[in-house]
Length: 214
Image (cartoon, rainbow, N blue to C red):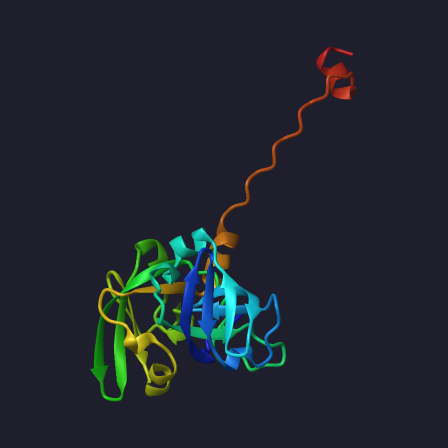
């Protein structure tokens, strides 16, 4: 489980067959084999690490469902370790399981902030609410406004400096994870399937006797 508060940005050193090697520092301070680290919002498992880097396995399905497949050597990525039980919950509940990708439509400065407009599929938009939470490339953000084809967020200077979001340009693909509570509420609101009725046995019972005049 994550919070969407980015700890540092790392650099992709190598993208091999089914694995990523990422240069980092802060997330390696207490790393162990098998730990979870969110890379651009995607929960991945540490398979090896050294003084200045770590390696994670990545499945073909993960590459298809996220923007990780578009990364290249030298790409900067947002990193967050799994939340510690004694840590502050600074963002919102983030699972690290990407729902879909979105496309950066525009970036527009207003005062000290930058408005970022993201387009996404209508199937995903139903889970996004104004003033609700959204995760973009692992960053916990507040939805400032909804559009016909997506939504807008406003990025403060600190978030812009500590993440990769403001380095994006129109047309870039980003990973999106909607508020997990909305998805569970929708699932719980769906009627449960009826259990199949048990078939009658072929033996003689009281119901059989009554039906046959006994």
